[in-house]
Image (tube, rainbow, N blue to C red):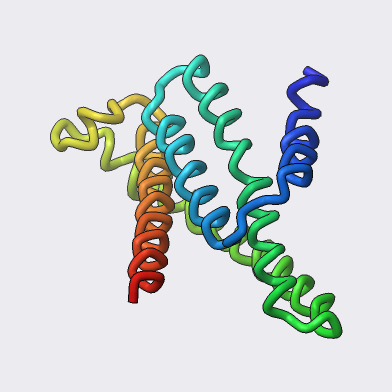
Length: 163
């Protein structure tokens, strides 16, 4: 277990040796899409033998994403303001994460889970009707949103480079 726990440190070390992307936005967008693909696998999987490797693969993307995001912030924000900007960014991330968790619980319990227990629908065919199917639907929808946001950003980036 210690080997698995130390893997993010290895990933960060390899990233610091490589130096990252010349265009950090590509790291952010690639990390978002990679995490979305892995998390979609978690949402579609029905057994821990699928969830664990998919979540492990998802963990590859976060050092890539966060280091690229930090590189963007450091180049766009003056050194005098970086402390305040990084603190505000961390504060907003924590607040939005808490709000998302507060929304996801009731959304899953009161809407998604009862909807998945009905006898019709494509979502029921994909996710089943067992307990947790509604949360799998929410998780997969969020993962698909991550992929869509990453693709939109990537193709917008390509379009802006060509014009």
